[in-house]
Image (cartoon, rainbow, N blue to C red; front, side, top):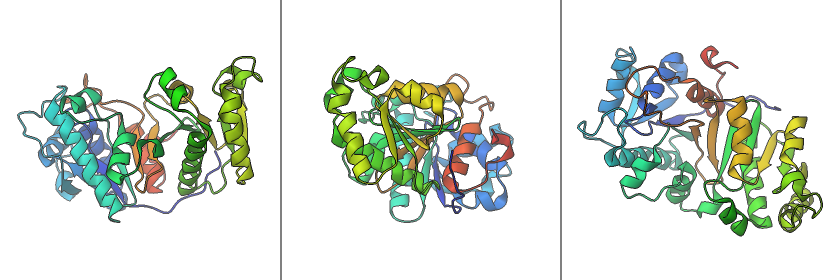
Length: 325
């Protein structure tokens, strides 16, 4: 990928579901950084849970030296590793919300959020369909203005649609939505050190519909979107079949129309090591490309590699050797 080095940035690190592996990977990731790098990162989450994770992971002495904002306070009676709990779900959202608000106020340049558990959040009665929806709500923009960008395995893949049925995605997809997504993707690439990204636009149908042989969706949606984006001066190829574009590996940013088009190649090339950026609002948030791993929470064995990669990506820092490709 074409990349230049970004300046180091100040990061707010929200700990995700306190009953998942989020607190453990947060502590382990910070322990892997040097003092100067840690100094740019502030933890947002329930202090007692994070302190317990520090002891569990063998970093008790590190805890007093970490910058921490108490957020998403959780009664320790509900803080049971591996348990899906409404109180933990509410804590997840509260911690991420506080970090986003601090970022919007100018205290931080970006937010990183450890994995959430959607069932726990829904049990708390909070409408939630992933971190992009939370970013939209906190930043006061429509959900359709915030998009997911996955980074991993040498790829950056932007998603026009995400957690919805294929039928629903097709019903709301239009050229304006594609253009809005690409514009957000270009701005994110510029922040990540790619000033003029080469863009590969996936078709909706196989072979981008092969004219109209496999349907008329591309003719109605992706073709006019690509024409408008080229007219705006962007370096964009497509729409072309996703398989053909990915096999070339010569673009800085790929644009997937549907969830699985973008997730499968990233998960194949970077299992448990990808970054998931919510882009398009006035606060940049990234999570990691894996879940809260309730089955191993509380055992101190969770792998912080994806979080370290995300810290390096958003923090403008060198990738730590423990997270090297």
